[in-house]
Image (cartoon, rainbow, N blue to C red; front, side):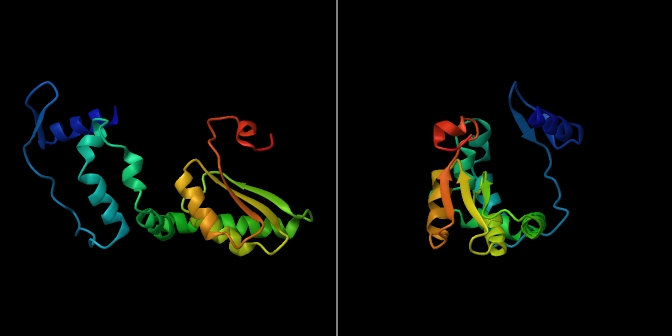
Length: 178
Protein backbone atom coordinates (compact mmCIF):
# COMPACT_ATOMS: atom_id res chain seq x y z
CA UNK A 1 0.00 0.00 0.00
CA UNK A 2 2.84 2.38 0.82
CA UNK A 3 4.48 1.88 -2.56
CA UNK A 4 1.15 2.48 -4.30
CA UNK A 5 0.66 5.71 -2.37
CA UNK A 6 4.19 6.91 -3.13
CA UNK A 7 3.65 6.23 -6.83
CA UNK A 8 0.35 8.14 -6.73
CA UNK A 9 2.10 11.14 -5.17
CA UNK A 10 4.80 11.08 -7.87
CA UNK A 11 2.10 10.88 -10.58
CA UNK A 12 0.22 13.81 -8.99
CA UNK A 13 3.42 15.85 -8.97
CA UNK A 14 4.10 15.02 -12.63
CA UNK A 15 7.26 13.01 -12.02
CA UNK A 16 5.77 9.68 -13.23
CA UNK A 17 3.20 8.65 -15.79
CA UNK A 18 1.59 5.25 -16.37
CA UNK A 19 2.62 3.51 -19.61
CA UNK A 20 1.08 0.13 -18.99
CA UNK A 21 -0.62 -2.02 -16.40
CA UNK A 22 2.40 -2.19 -14.08
CA UNK A 23 4.80 0.11 -15.92
CA UNK A 24 5.75 3.71 -15.32
CA UNK A 25 7.81 6.34 -17.13
CA UNK A 26 9.92 8.90 -15.31
CA UNK A 27 8.85 12.32 -16.61
CA UNK A 28 11.20 14.40 -14.50
CA UNK A 29 13.81 13.80 -11.88
CA UNK A 30 13.36 15.14 -8.39
CA UNK A 31 15.75 17.95 -7.52
CA UNK A 32 18.17 17.15 -4.71
CA UNK A 33 17.38 19.64 -1.91
CA UNK A 34 20.74 18.96 -0.27
CA UNK A 35 24.26 17.98 -1.12
CA UNK A 36 24.64 14.17 -1.20
CA UNK A 37 26.57 12.64 1.69
CA UNK A 38 30.17 11.66 1.05
CA UNK A 39 30.52 8.09 -0.25
CA UNK A 40 32.50 7.13 2.84
CA UNK A 41 29.60 7.51 5.28
CA UNK A 42 27.93 4.30 6.49
CA UNK A 43 24.50 5.58 5.47
CA UNK A 44 25.73 6.24 1.94
CA UNK A 45 27.32 2.79 1.69
CA UNK A 46 24.04 1.14 2.70
CA UNK A 47 22.02 3.33 0.32
CA UNK A 48 24.39 2.48 -2.52
CA UNK A 49 24.31 -1.26 -1.75
CA UNK A 50 20.52 -1.39 -1.37
CA UNK A 51 19.70 1.07 -4.15
CA UNK A 52 21.50 -1.01 -6.78
CA UNK A 53 19.08 -3.90 -6.24
CA UNK A 54 15.93 -2.11 -5.06
CA UNK A 55 13.96 -3.36 -8.04
CA UNK A 56 14.81 -6.98 -7.21
CA UNK A 57 13.96 -6.47 -3.53
CA UNK A 58 10.57 -4.96 -4.34
CA UNK A 59 9.81 -7.88 -6.66
CA UNK A 60 10.92 -10.48 -4.11
CA UNK A 61 14.05 -11.45 -6.03
CA UNK A 62 16.57 -10.29 -3.41
CA UNK A 63 16.63 -10.71 0.35
CA UNK A 64 16.64 -7.29 2.09
CA UNK A 65 18.38 -8.60 5.22
CA UNK A 66 21.26 -9.90 3.13
CA UNK A 67 21.81 -6.34 1.91
CA UNK A 68 21.74 -4.83 5.39
CA UNK A 69 23.75 -7.63 6.97
CA UNK A 70 26.00 -9.08 4.24
CA UNK A 71 27.95 -12.28 4.81
CA UNK A 72 31.23 -10.38 4.45
CA UNK A 73 30.54 -8.31 7.56
CA UNK A 74 28.21 -5.95 9.37
CA UNK A 75 30.63 -3.06 9.86
CA UNK A 76 28.39 -0.62 7.97
CA UNK A 77 25.32 -1.38 10.07
CA UNK A 78 27.38 -1.36 13.26
CA UNK A 79 28.70 2.09 12.38
CA UNK A 80 25.14 3.32 11.86
CA UNK A 81 23.88 1.86 15.14
CA UNK A 82 26.82 3.41 17.00
CA UNK A 83 26.81 6.73 15.18
CA UNK A 84 23.17 7.66 14.59
CA UNK A 85 22.18 10.33 17.12
CA UNK A 86 18.89 8.60 18.00
CA UNK A 87 20.65 5.32 18.76
CA UNK A 88 23.29 7.11 20.83
CA UNK A 89 20.62 8.81 22.92
CA UNK A 90 18.58 5.65 23.47
CA UNK A 91 21.67 3.61 24.36
CA UNK A 92 22.72 6.23 26.92
CA UNK A 93 19.18 6.26 28.37
CA UNK A 94 19.32 2.47 28.67
CA UNK A 95 22.71 2.57 30.40
CA UNK A 96 21.51 5.27 32.82
CA UNK A 97 18.35 3.27 33.63
CA UNK A 98 20.51 0.25 34.46
CA UNK A 99 22.84 2.40 36.56
CA UNK A 100 19.85 3.63 38.59
CA UNK A 101 18.39 0.13 38.90
CA UNK A 102 21.69 -1.11 40.27
CA UNK A 103 21.79 1.71 42.83
CA UNK A 104 18.27 0.88 44.10
CA UNK A 105 18.24 -2.90 43.91
CA UNK A 106 19.98 -4.93 46.63
CA UNK A 107 19.48 -8.16 44.67
CA UNK A 108 22.66 -9.44 43.03
CA UNK A 109 23.30 -10.75 40.55
CA UNK A 110 20.53 -9.35 38.36
CA UNK A 111 19.42 -11.54 35.47
CA UNK A 112 19.47 -9.47 32.29
CA UNK A 113 18.08 -10.81 29.01
CA UNK A 114 18.82 -8.70 25.95
CA UNK A 115 16.44 -9.66 23.16
CA UNK A 116 17.60 -8.78 19.65
CA UNK A 117 21.13 -7.71 20.61
CA UNK A 118 22.14 -7.38 16.96
CA UNK A 119 25.43 -5.59 16.50
CA UNK A 120 25.90 -5.14 20.25
CA UNK A 121 25.90 -1.34 20.22
CA UNK A 122 23.55 -1.14 23.22
CA UNK A 123 25.25 -4.13 24.84
CA UNK A 124 28.59 -2.34 24.97
CA UNK A 125 27.17 0.65 26.86
CA UNK A 126 25.24 -1.55 29.28
CA UNK A 127 28.31 -3.67 29.99
CA UNK A 128 30.29 -0.52 30.79
CA UNK A 129 27.86 0.07 33.68
CA UNK A 130 28.17 -3.41 35.18
CA UNK A 131 30.74 -4.41 37.78
CA UNK A 132 31.76 -8.03 38.44
CA UNK A 133 28.96 -9.78 40.29
CA UNK A 134 26.27 -7.25 39.28
CA UNK A 135 24.54 -9.40 36.68
CA UNK A 136 24.19 -12.56 34.69
CA UNK A 137 23.78 -11.20 31.19
CA UNK A 138 22.25 -13.12 28.29
CA UNK A 139 22.70 -11.57 24.87
CA UNK A 140 20.29 -13.00 22.29
CA UNK A 141 19.55 -12.57 18.64
CA UNK A 142 17.74 -14.55 15.96
CA UNK A 143 20.79 -14.33 13.70
CA UNK A 144 23.60 -16.86 14.16
CA UNK A 145 25.97 -14.25 12.69
CA UNK A 146 25.24 -11.74 15.46
CA UNK A 147 25.37 -14.38 18.19
CA UNK A 148 28.74 -15.64 16.96
CA UNK A 149 30.10 -12.09 16.82
CA UNK A 150 28.85 -11.41 20.36
CA UNK A 151 30.46 -14.64 21.59
CA UNK A 152 33.78 -13.55 20.10
CA UNK A 153 33.52 -9.91 21.17
CA UNK A 154 32.49 -10.59 24.76
CA UNK A 155 34.39 -13.88 25.29
CA UNK A 156 36.37 -12.44 28.20
CA UNK A 157 33.22 -11.73 30.23
CA UNK A 158 32.38 -14.80 32.29
CA UNK A 159 28.96 -13.40 33.26
CA UNK A 160 27.80 -13.00 29.64
CA UNK A 161 26.22 -15.77 27.58
CA UNK A 162 25.34 -15.19 23.90
CA UNK A 163 22.58 -17.41 22.51
CA UNK A 164 20.13 -17.73 19.67
CA UNK A 165 16.55 -16.73 20.45
CA UNK A 166 13.65 -16.59 18.03
CA UNK A 167 10.83 -14.75 19.81
CA UNK A 168 8.31 -16.31 17.43
CA UNK A 169 9.02 -19.73 18.98
CA UNK A 170 8.46 -20.88 22.59
CA UNK A 171 11.50 -19.86 24.71
CA UNK A 172 11.44 -23.15 26.64
CA UNK A 173 11.87 -25.08 23.39
CA UNK A 174 15.05 -23.05 22.81
CA UNK A 175 16.52 -23.80 26.24
CA UNK A 176 15.27 -20.72 28.12
CA UNK A 177 13.40 -20.76 31.42
CA UNK A 178 9.76 -19.76 31.24
